[in-house]
Image (cartoon, one colour):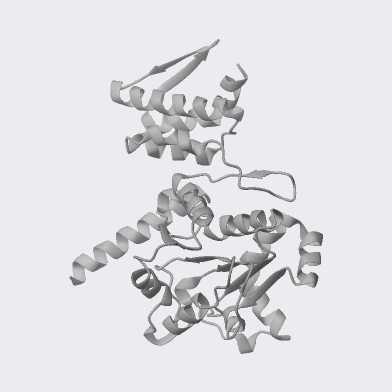
Length: 313
């Protein structure tokens, strides 16, 4: 019964999502569910409900996001993959919440980080690339696999120059590094974070600061890598020291480099594709774990750029 309550969600919101998606009606009587509607739609709705019950029986909690994700897997005929989603907690946040990959793309990404020295994560905004990489870094740090976490991103602004920001260098680069701080605060809490920064265990710095250093025993994350030039990317990759891991994240559709400079991220994916121990994981809009509208927005933009290509092609 408690599974039935969790399955329906507060105010039956989970079941309403399924009813709206497939134009069926779902009625619960005791321990039985009756689904009525078009036979094909009923079959899909039943598969979604089975999958959700399966997740519940493995101790997962349901949210609008994973109900929608289960529906999209069933629509693709890949419902057997839903089972892979249960389980793996990669990190406990400072508030004691277990953090788990929410989509198959996220799970592939976390496994790739575990199994490779260099992992490149490519995909749209909201797929959890930065957040999960920071979670994996904190996990490696807590289990003493590394003794430093280094977070960096190129300070290419979306159309504004660093010189106009007030204050010393730290306060000038802080706004760019905000998403990295936010993820770290979530995992560690502000006090612990501060303590590690003072001890030099955590460093958040613009990419230019990496020149001329070799980074041993470190977990290094390069965020917004689509805004690196080819030279910067090569400089960054060659900082890799012994017993270190690197994660490079970016979205090749959001390149802000001035005057047509080529993205170092695109080049590095091409150049390094056949090297052992370096893996690229590509996310799609299905892996977006932000508001449902974010998925719709990404899809609309992709469609628009496809149409533009056909027009000019």
